Image (cartoon, rainbow, N blue to C red):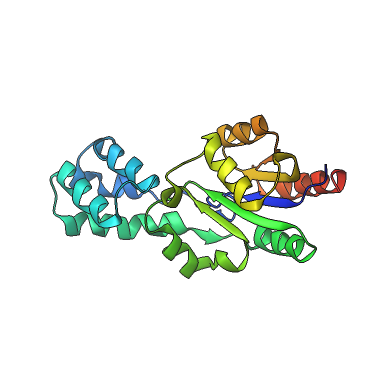
Length: 201
């Protein structure tokens, strides 16, 4: 069956997101092991169970700091989250879209991500469908988030190829019958994408 849609992850694929060490930077103020104390709050933000304002309030309470201090941390964290634009991947993807392939995104995201990533990278101009975990209440590798994307595309798994930098997310897509590229670097991923598209026309 011919491939009709190319589905990409954002972080680590459409964005370069190297660690900038913000957790360590804030450890003197928040305390050793502080990320563990806000883990449940962050998880709730990933699936949109709470608002960004509630994230700030609940995380600050868990850490025993003022809300404005956690907001200051988040200002730092958003820099790493948004990262830098992987122009080579985006240009390749846009060229395939111009050839007639449908484009989609499935991203494990965080409340507030759409606005920040749109301002930085304007993903809405690159993709036909954007599935953010915080907006749909599901996250990879839950098969339901892939199935939701497929439903919105109106396609069977075999008509799509999925690109992600985390193997568990790739494995979930394979299990559904999607073609998969495990992104390790840009050159490798685009080469494998070319091969899959060439073999499934």
